[in-house]
Structure formats: structure tokens, C-alpha cells
Image (cartoon, rainbow, N blue to C red; front, side, top):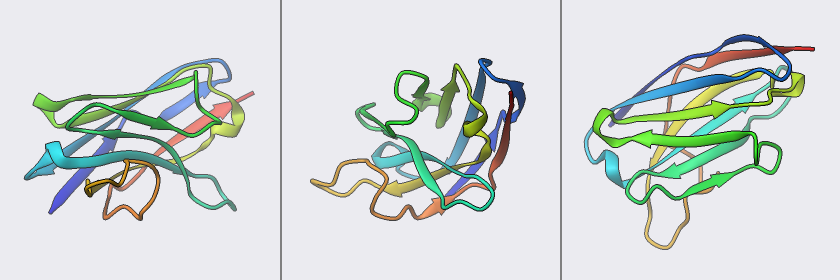
Length: 126
């Protein structure tokens, strides 16, 4: 069982930056895929970035490459999402998620993640 608590959302003008944090609790944190997903009103949820906690390997959606960076502090069991050069289209509820890493399956946006946080709102104004 894993519990996830996000923080760091807020409102910012276009071009600004925010950093989201996701603190995890539970066992075997180092064998998990940790991901950030987002959902804007009226749109489907989409993957933003993932990280394999054991190796630190990362994966990004094309829409955020070069602007967002996912990182981790294993000692704190915390994953971060640094968001720079924010755009109005980045406005969404951002969710942290986790699933156990399966052998030979990369930490991408699928298969479905098992554990989810409550979400944190990010609003970017033009």
C-alpha cells in the first residue's frame, strides 16, 4: 500500500515556474514507477512525466519536454515536478501516481497506475 500527498500547486503567469512535490509513504518505494498526470476541465487525463525510483530513469510527454523536469529524493520518498516556461494550456489538476515496477515493462504512462494522490491545482494565466 502506498499513500501519496501532493503539494506546490498554485497560480502563475505564463512563462513562470512552479514546483510540485509528491511525498510517498509505504514499503518498497524504490521499486516503484512514480508519475505525474494532469487533467484539465473537459479533457481526458494525460501523462506528464514518470520516474523509476530505483534507477532515476525518466520519461516525458512531448508537450512538456524541455520545460518540465521530474526528479526524486529517495531519502525523503519524495518526487518533484519542476515546471518552467509554463503556458496557459498547462492549466490542470495535477496528480501524483505510483505503481510497482514490473520486469521488462518501462515506467511510461501505461499500464494503469495503482495509487493516486488527491491532486493539486495549477493555473497559468496569459
